[in-house]
Length: 294
Image 1 (cartoon, rainbow, N blue to C red):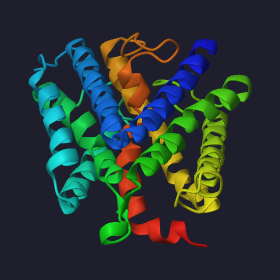
Image 2: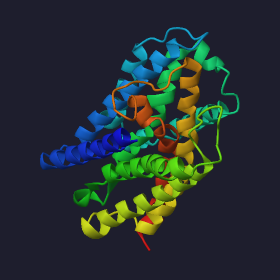
Image 3: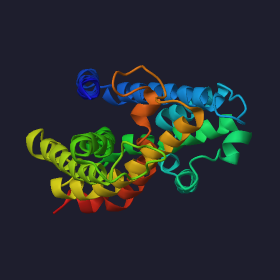
Image 4: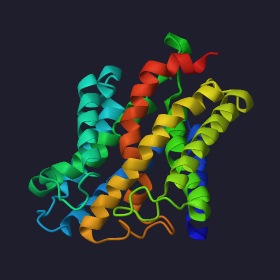
């Protein structure tokens, strides 16, 4: 747990430094995109390595990783605003997300889509599902010459809402967790830890909004509304994390990698974002104006 705590703090420090240094050269968005694309690419590679160890699954082609980079690059640098938040892409993410949730009902069964199309499956599971973050990252406010990019702050908020659920789960679940939520998938997860994680996520999201709006003077959401909107993201992060556990159990692996001490690999780092990213895009699309005023 100590290694996990140090790694978590270190990762947030790295993100803060990238934003700060990138801001000095007016490339904060581009620098963060590069970091995100690298993490997603590494996570997709690790998923393919897991898939190769699952009985009955064909060998995935690393061209899927290249296709993932192309998708993310095109959406960030080339696509118009309406293409980044395209309704069809969002519906596609919701449909695949629904498929992923069904895996929790039969965790010992290899999905037929994965057996037949492992390369496409890895592409859909990671870069396609996480492409919603690109639409959020390119959000802007204002008109004409007063337009300013604000999306990066909202992407960080999505990460805060999602990842602090893990933090709260550890803080509350380790000492107080007694009732297991899915013992056949992830024996360490408890209902007490999940509840603690959701509460910590809301508190951290509200604090982040307060720091931006009232301390740093950045136009952002009202703190209590940021906390409220974080609740569905925190809730979704729990099954999102369990879904990766299903794949790891099918492959007979404890972690997806050993890159980050106490956490595992890149896939272990970003697995909980798979379901929360499309949900965050929908929430911000319909609730952003409400969340900024009041």
